[in-house]
Image (cartoon, rainbow, N blue to C red; front, side):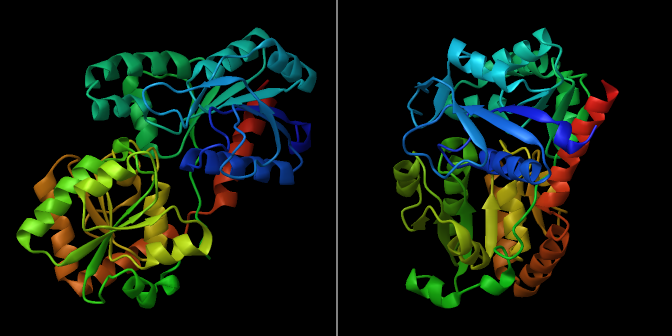
Length: 381
């Protein structure tokens, strides 16, 4: 079995219509596979205004706007006849599912019915989302449903060892492999730090820029972030908050941190410059399965203060390249940030350690592990 023998049908709930870490990883994977001769066809909901052009052949799956005020996302209506006919004509010999939505359930059922190997990749801790919308009691039910879902696959790909541990704790018995992540080391580099750019935003050279990076949604820990900022202000810690990103919770968040500087959504070298211009990267999210933004900050030699949760625990060596903090401990977060702000030597040593630790994260290496896992399963068949 060679890569050129593979015909992969990839199912995604959001391949390119809203930009996020999960679909960035999927597009990079598809590009890597295509370069090595794998035939790939992607099935996902689409919109008329995608966030970026898709990599590879993309087939639209009919979908409805997600309820609950999150209409920017689409919920696929399973595998309707037109899509199923396209799938059968494509005749994949391997199915890859990236989300436990209705489309994912229908895709793995189709693979099982046709005796085709099925992979799942785990990207998002959906079970954690509900606590941010006062529905935390639903989490145990979601965990049970996800355990049943992932046990239907020949192999589950997770981005970090801590996620493998979590799935085993849920009771998932399917084989698990690591599909890590990479970094654009040219873009995320300490040399991109730009004090003139900071000054133009009103951030003085003597102010420590404490940054948030990501989509502005409450499940990224925005509420905890705001509480920590207020605690820093109460303590008189000299800092400025720099928020990099956009999203549906922007107005709410701006009201919580009224003195923050908001850059809006940034990409490319503009994003690299913004991250390198931080002094502390603060990531209180507990929803991460890996933490792409954390490795980007590390690559730019920025110390990280993060929740002691999946993803971050695999990246941050506490006290060396940053600090890990109990997820909802406002005072401990403020202690960690204040310590970095007050000690330039510690800030430099942590930044250097993070930069060195991030050097090993390469997209080709990460995606090669997926291709190897595909071939391993196919040879076993």
